[in-house]
Length: 227
Image 1 (cartoon, one colour):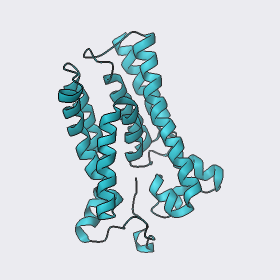
Image 2: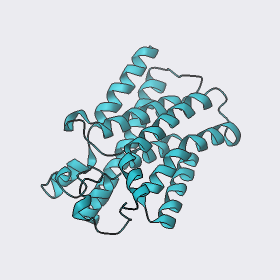
Image 3: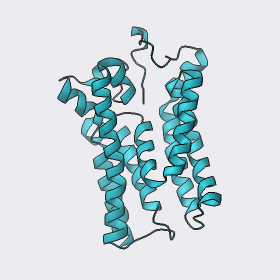
């Protein structure tokens, strides 16, 4: 039954994550492929820069729903219907679903394995799994974006802080003795993937050519990828 639970979580979360919100919203609302405009990235930031607030808000809502649904469905099926838990902690299946749905979002099978960077989706799944850790990570993101004006800096900092906050919260604030290590490991994998997806941004930050939040994208930066 445990293998079946893992199989369901992986398959459902990946396929559901492959439904890219930015691509679907822009095709429905603008009859355009977001991957052909701006930074050519199928993410929220690029939707906002190219098509404005309306499509960006719709993308945000769809991504919120997608992350929450993936975690909730896997919890209901695995924990409630199959009566399966891992490491004595019912949070772990949520972390696994969050990791896989993010991978589906970044490498969607329905769109040639080319999607977004997964930052927003990681935040929405974390909100469902562990609200306090989510608040701390999102707070880190907002603080860094306000201070630096770089979305990428906030995203990278939040990704790095995610497993740290997970370990601290589940070790000392709301202890989960059996689940803290597995949960932290999955959180670290999520953080590593997000940082890796920001490799081009890191290079531009080092070169001083990264685009600041709210500024218009230069044509020479059209290959930039956003969140």
